[in-house]
Image (tube, rainbow, N blue to C red; front, side, top):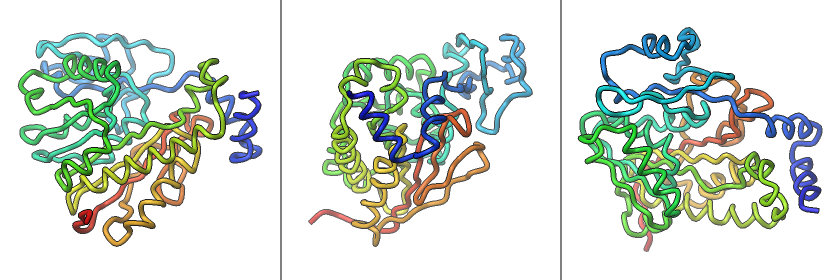
Length: 304
C-alpha cells in the first residue's frame, strides 16, 4: 500500500513525466571525483588523472572529473591527506554557490557526511573558521573522519565539529555567521526507493512533517546569519513543498530583511529553474536530485 501511495503522490506532482523520473531515480547516480585542493604535493590534476588512468579531458568547471563507470580509490599525498573525494556534481555546485571567502565565519548546519563541508573549508584559505554541525552521533563520526582524511592538521584547527540541534544556532548565536549552508533533512526519494523498509513505512504525512522541520531550520539560519551575509538552502527532495515551498514561507514572513540572490547556472548544465531556485533532476541531467536556493540578508533582524 505504501508503494502505491508513494507512486500516486509523486505522479500527481509530475504527471506524465513521473514514469521517466521514477525510472531515473532507480539508476546509479552520476558522480564526480573532486580534486582536494589541500592535497598540494606538487602534482597537477592531469598527473593525478594519469596515475589513475583517467581521462583528464573530462575535467569539469566545478574542479572535478565527471565519472561514469570508473572507480576512483582516494590515495594519500605527501601532505598526509587524500587526493580525490567522490560526490554528486550537483552537491559540488550547491557548496560552490555559497562562494565562501577567506576570513569568514561559516556554519554548515547539517554537515554530514562532509563532502560539501570540504568545499566550504577550502574557501577559508588562510583565516576564518567553520562550524560543521550534525545532530546524529553516527553521522558526526563519519563527518569527523572525512575532515581528518582530507584537511591538513593546521587547517583543522579552524574547523569545529558540533552536535547540537541546528535550530539552536538562531537563538544562541544570532547574527554571528557570514555564510550558512543548510542542506536540510528531506524526503530523499531516491533513498526511499532504494530501501524497501523506508518505502513500506512511507506515508503522505512524512513530507508534511519534514516541511515543518525544514522551515524551523531555515528560520534559525536566517536568525544566525549576519546582515549582508548569504544563505544557501538545499535538499535532495523532488517535492516542491520541501523546496520552493519552504523558501517562499520564509520570504513571506521576513521579506523586508532577506531576498533571493543569483545562482550561476553556467557551472553545471541541466538545471531547471523553479520560482525561487534551481532543481537538478536525474532524468534530465543525470545528477541529483538536488534543489538549491541562495538568499541574501539585507539588514539586521532580532527576535523581540
